[in-house]
Image 1 (cartoon, rainbow, N blue to C red):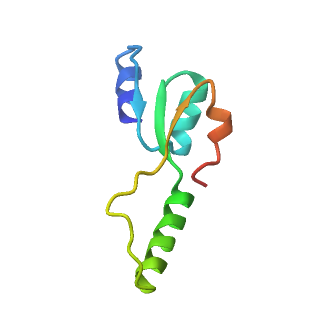
Image 2: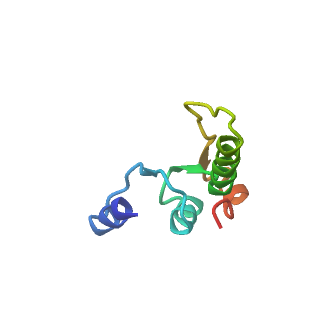
Length: 86
């Protein structure tokens, strides 16, 4: 959002991307001011953390590495993800 504010202050049109998909960023994507944001499903992240904690408590092994799904939000699909982190 800082890059967008700076670009607007300088009256420049830039390709701007981000990595959190907060509400302001998603609105800016919908309006075409930001090109894209990478979003992680924080609910799923929490769920996975609880599942792994439960496994540890039960003496089971957990993966050394786990990659969360990355969602690339663009103007074409922003409506689908507008509530992903609420």
